[in-house]
Length: 185
Image (cartoon, rainbow, N blue to C red; front, side):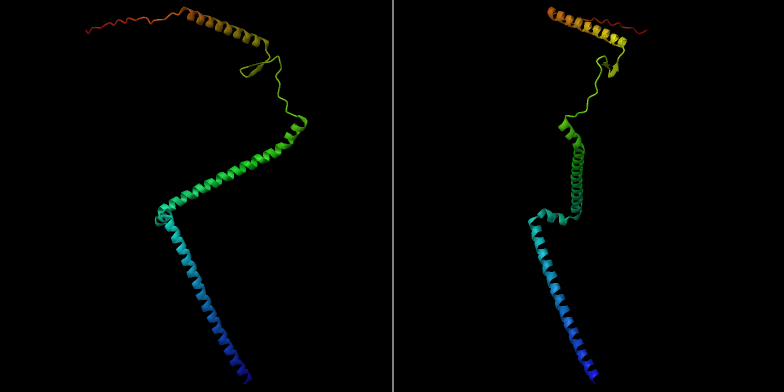
């Protein structure tokens, strides 16, 4: 009897716990539905109000093809902008590292006045047509050609000065053209 009594009491506790659990689940579901409904309606109301204040966006929402094309263009432009910013940052970092790597040489130059010595050309060499020559015969030929060019230049200058002094107006000669008529036979 004790075990039957105990079993009846446990069945009652079990039924009470099941009812309590069902009530709690129903209340939680109703609260959850209430929260979802109120948040959804609040968000919907705010989006509707925002679309009323922004008619262009509302028009884009009403025309999905145009909205898709403009969204793709915006995405491409955004990616291009980000790629440009990335390249600028990468170039700045590259320049920074090059400057860091050059800094010991710049420090030596600043502290000790050290500089790389330029390549010097001997006094006996002449640069002609970007070639270095030490051949005296070749140099003599070049000097003779330069003298001839200088003499020609002086002659041309004298001729121009003489022409300016004469003030001659050169008139074109009339050219007579005779035409021969060939007869038909």
